[in-house]
Amino acid sequence: MFSSTKALQVSELTQIIQKLLEENLNDICLEGEISNYRPASSGHVYFTLKDNHSVISAVMFRSSASALRFRPKDGDFVKVTGRLSVYPPRGSYQIVCDTMDLAGEGQLLAILEQRKQRFAQLGYFDANKKKQIPSYPERIAIITSPTGAAIRDIQRVIKSRYDNVHLIVVPSLVQGNEAGDALAKRVRQINRLGLADVIILTRGGGSLEDLICFSEEILVQAVVDSRIPIISAVGHEIDWALTDFAADYRAATPSAAAEKVTENWLNFYDRLYSASQDMRYFVQNQIDQVRKMTGIFSKQDIQRSFQIYLQPFQQRLDEAKEQLMRHIKQNLDDKCNWLNIRLAQLEEFNPQKIIRRGYSLIKDEEGNIVSTSKIVNPQDRLTIHLQDGHIETVVQGVTNEEQ
Image 1 (cartoon, one colour):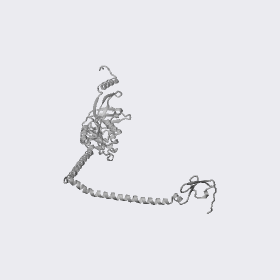
Image 2 (cartoon, helix red, strand yellow):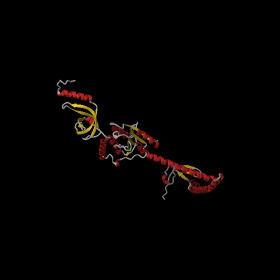
Image 3 (cartoon, helix red, strand yellow):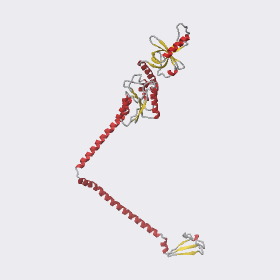
Image 4 (spheres, helix red, strand yellow):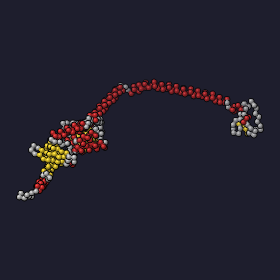
């Protein structure tokens, strides 16, 4: 490539070094302590990584820095992946970082404690904001890996306690850099569609690094915003995540979460079974008592006792019937007498009866009764009604006598 006897320009040597480094060291993983951490207004961050003996410059451009899950600071011990790059104007080399994670469990705990304090100050963990877990949920959404042990444990417990519940398994990543976003998306989807009465957010046990996605800010925020009550059941009893503090109820294990959502159903069916047994015993006891009472009597004795019991009622019924008939007859007689009296009164005022005594009834052409001469004029045609017929006549003259 070059000869030691030929003089090189500085830029030529820099280009050779750049080519060697960038072509051969383009995928490296490096651990070290951050120092001189400098975020730029452009979104890029600049810092150095060091150990006890050496220092290397580092840069993380905005596209990668925006995906960081924590806030780096001087003194953090981190693990980065990236590639070596040479900056020709200064003849220096640096590592261009694509990812950055805390190295070591102690650093993860420090980050989680930092987040925990910040979320607590925002009120995410306030007890008065916790929603009540439904007493008798009929639809239970489970956000977890569809192939993990957690879903099998939950299904086994729920089916053994209350087989009629509707389980909705919502598959999601539960580990890795993209798991926090995926879990948060599932929580929001269930709320948007109203799929369940309660949500179980769960996975099996693992290392602190495995469970870190359940402490991501985006997931904690989704849990706090959820209108549907959420149970957090992450890992084993000794494991914990920030969703445990943000959720409405924290279950020590996935099985404990299943027991929580079915505890009232189980008690309800226990009480129902106990009540049915008590009722069955009571009814059977009453039947036995009746059998004992009826067993000492013959059929004839029962019929005779029934007749003796029924006789007073039959007698009262006959008496009431006779009294009713007498009352009806008396009422009819009274009505007939009243009608006869009224008929006699009407007969006294019958015009035919008056006519038979020698009087007559005079009517004009319209059939009106003529009761005074003042309404009659000469040439009027009148009809005179007598006892045995009537006379048609024409008025020749009218004489009015003053009273």
